[in-house]
Amino acid sequence: DAKTTQPNSMESNEEEPVHLPCNHSTISGTDYIHWYRQLPSQGPEYVIHGLTSNVNNRMASLAIAEDRKSSTLILHRATLRDAAVYYCIPHPGASYGKLTFGQGTILTVHP
Amino acid sequence: DGGITQSPKYLFRKEGQNVTLSCEQNLNHDAMYWYRQDPGQGLRLIYYSQIVNDFQKGDIAEGYSVSREKKESFPLTVTSAQKNPTAFYLCASSHKGRRPNEKLFFGSGTQLSVL
View 1 (spheres, rainbow over the protein chains, first blue to last red):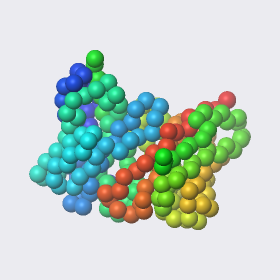
View 2 (tube, rainbow over the protein chains, first blue to last red):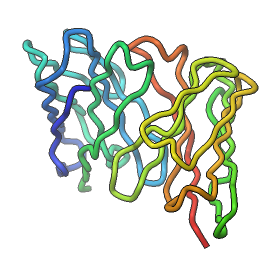
View 3 (cartoon, rainbow over the protein chains, first blue to last red):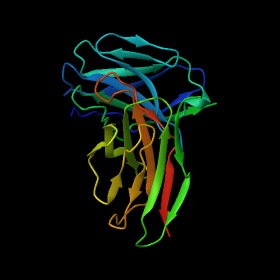
View 4 (tube, chains in turn purple, brown):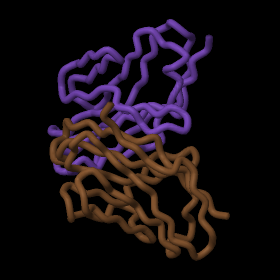
């Protein structure tokens, strides 16, 4: 499985954009990049995923580097409800849904 | 609303006791999973199932058992052989469990503690 590197923690102010980076230099060509987030005492929640192109949805945007060795999750205007642990997860095609969750990035949002 | 229901939210186990955590989904998903989360850590896969009456060990299956008699249900038993069971247990499901673009849907978890 591809290994990921994420900052342990990041901070942001409310209503400012947040860029959460992830390095996945050993990713294979068929691995999708998934992002999940987990609020305290809750189960993880799907945020977004992509393969090669940048992706947008109502929650966030995902920018994938051209060489696919890194990606960035973008929250366009952080709110207090975005404070969570964010996990970047390469999803191998043959893993049969078995995602590997590392320690992620703890995002703190200040009012 | 469709989703995954885990119960109970909190569970206490005595020494030598087996306990069973419930997980039910009404999303009509084929694949279901159990993860364990220790404080400040990521999630580790215990067991997964892609179809009724079939399941596979994950990375940390020792001391746990599961069954999949119905599509909607995937209970996890923490046996007395699991010497360090205190953790947050999460159940998840996905549509088929075979494609890399599938999303996982999680329940709200069960916190298990040892008395």
